[in-house]
Length: 511
Image (tube, rainbow, N blue to C red; front, side, top):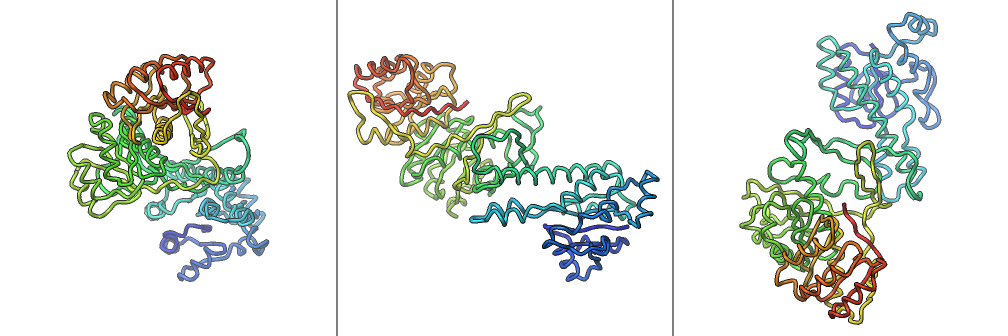
């Protein structure tokens, strides 16, 4: 029995090769894999012993040879195939163990050159993987070191079943598909628009108990992609404490983290059902938390708390008395962890802050039979201008709150309205079929605190009714995108009620 071993990831390789040798397998290898096995004392032959031809072109050509691919692709159940092998003195190859050059890791390094990236595109490896997977009834194909122990166990017991061979072939084709996807993504970087054909590479993080509801099966996958920041956020968060995350937990945690990290100042976000119900910025995160909580103490119960700075002992103390599902922070003071770990039902997550992207991140939304793809709503704050359109212009403090409010409103489901004062969310209306209802909900939630606050709308006012509602609630200033054919009606209503209004020309729909 012959096996070719040629791997980039050498995890468990030596022990696996030793066991193969004990079972009587003849091992052939290339380059670094052969060197590693030789140093470990594992009997191994060079691939050139099969091909009769040396490795050339700096290793670019070593396994691309009929003596290799003939031995892999020949069908053992076809007499003419086996006869041709005999005529050409080709010995069948019964196992191929290959995983590919670390392309994603290479191109994700800062300053990597195009030449270096191209040299990390594997050619011979994918060819052997695909050939072996195509002929899996006769050739065992292994691409994942995690399969080594079970494979040895099966070989000791007499071999793999057809279904087990098929499973390994499926993993092999998925391995090359993810690899090709990463290369295509890299070569597309810097191009305008969207490619005509697109594939996504996803790697399972873990199974979930169920989906949104108990009757729905679910799993959590990470997008395997090139570019900076790929291991940041909730997808790759480290869980320091608490029971497993649920489907809904992950959705809410992602919304909370996206909200908190969208602000440069120390900020705390409290999220319920993907919408921020509490949000505040302060120099001290404990005070920011307290202000965020005061914005809607009722809705905070059972929510998700995210902070874009180290979670301090002071903030952990301030969280006492309210049940939360999850806390998320880039780091925790040890004293804070001591306090938080006393909550048996709290899940504690530590997540990396988002890094600058080499190109805009993409958002995906599934519809039946298709996928909507768009750039993330990540317009830098310095590219959003607040243009006054009313006689009264905002005060300096109102401008600061208007900017805060307009950044907050983009994280709330449309039609979205937020009320803010002193960089604190006082009330919000979300997901309503009309903007008037959203304003009404936000004002009722804020109560008396609405007086003197500022209001942000994620989209334009088609009529002046929302401005009149704001005036009745005592709102001092409004920020909205503008662009309605009835803008003048809204501006006139604001002027008549002494409200300062600014427009941005930028819309923040979130469906």
